[in-house]
Length: 131
Image 1: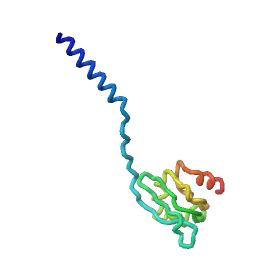
Image 2 (image 1 turned 180 degrees about the vertical axis):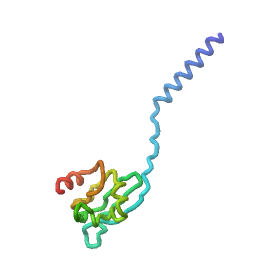
Image 3 (image 1 turned 30 degrees about the vertical axis):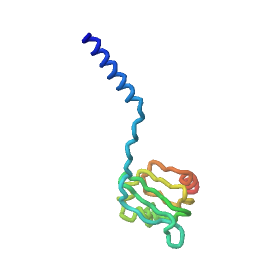
Image 4 (image 1 turned 135 degrees about the vertical axis):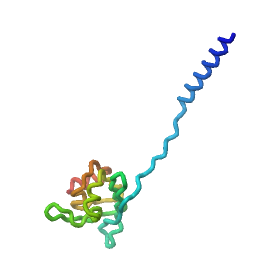
């Protein structure tokens, strides 16, 4: 009789473990990387129509609405990229670029000097074709 109770309890425990395994797991919250720098890079009169942020993970994000400003280079040096104004440190930190849907044009030379390994959005693809 003792053996039967143990087998019954073991079977019940196994069934409970299987049932718990079938329950959907709650997704873990994803924390965004902290913003380390940012500013504006829009083409509108005050330039605030497009904003840029650089997070601690190295993602440069362009957001807003409309066109982004174009930038120039001299001898391969980017003299006026807003995310390059803290010296080369920001350019070296850029690992990926995200261009949100509201940004319609990415300015010339926007990614010169950046080591971004990826881009996202349709705007990025069309911008790359215009560079």
